[in-house]
Image (cartoon, one colour):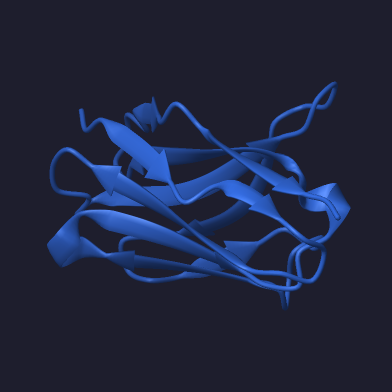
Length: 117
């Protein structure tokens, strides 16, 4: 199982941008990769996902503002977030799930994103 490390979080003003990275300890080939987030007092929710074949899916709340991408050669996944809103404030988690019948999950430790003026 790969280990995942997120980076790129921080404090940004409303309307600003951030790019999150998720670096894996090994190959991400054969893994569907996703970004989740969890705000205080709320359940963890899916933000965006990308399969090994490049198919993407986005939560309605971020469509048009967020782009997920992966670089299999670098074993890294990215989340470009633009036009950030205060409601985007959360801890963002990277997830990797094997694309087989077992669906093994691996989570990163999370990175804090705070959108505030």
